[in-house]
Length: 432
Image 1 (cartoon, rainbow, N blue to C red):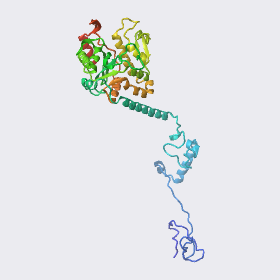
Image 2 (cartoon, rainbow, N blue to C red):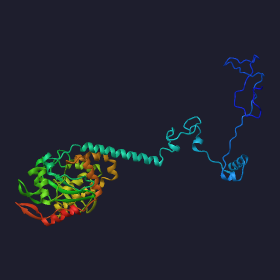
Image 3 (cartoon, rainbow, N blue to C red):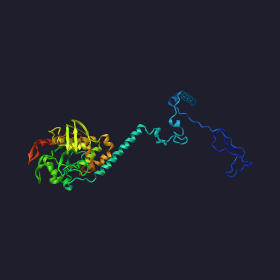
């Protein structure tokens, strides 16, 4: 009986057999290279091993009953008519375009060629530059926020617990309007701007309030109402006097109580402006833009001079504070404290607008670090951030001053408050 299957049976794949070189029919030891050749001594003939692969057929090809030969001819004709495709960049670069992989397909994702990214895009590709700019902007804002929080931590409002007890708690400013009393003192810094003026006061406890402003901000609104520093009021413990004497009589808490009694507005927060650091903060954000009348100001015998024509002006920190301090305008003798308080409100609005300028963004870490140093307040970092955001959302309002009539009391020039006008302006402040 033969060891080989009939010719009409498809053989199983097997290794070709070899004849024992010694001519014996016994198999040699494994690994010796000799194999069993069968009883006949013949090796198995090698037969061709064909692989049949069916060409994918479309529905149209099946309906036309096309064979594999017809489909191959059709594909060859289509390939001959198709124009030559230019080589891709990775094909053109050869092994370099494949990331040095020695002929392997190019890797997905970032390539390992310096200066190129996916699909061999260069580093200066607009989309990549935009991505880098966004990442840098996010880092810049986060850095500024961290510096702001570090600088604002702790709170430094004068008067301590007594001042905090005089304040009325308010809700989150992003959703609820709060009333903030902004106070500017006539105390001078030891160094820098106005530090060597004649008669300068360096003691905060006996300072006078040159600026008193109620800022109604939050919940989508931002409105301000200034109180003239010469307004005649009754100060407990000191009697009838100008309202700017309330700080020296009873400190920040007394100032809060007197303002509330005058206006009927409950104060939620207090901000005391530090003159020297405020100038640095204004310079950090690139100055402020205000609209002024004709100004001819000469403070401290020519130490600080400001001459402005009517119109729009961009002021530095020193110029802005000089304008805020101007009470006597030699170019306009009718200029008084009411005009001065309007300019102070314009400066605040100008600061808010400048915060979103390109210069302010480029100097944002410095401004964020100096902003808390320019003020004294019991508000923490989160409340201050809400204040800045709420002020921007609320927009800018027209400057409003409490006003009144001019008179004299104990030989001093004072402003006599008009109760009906005060109530009307307070309602406008709170309800628009």
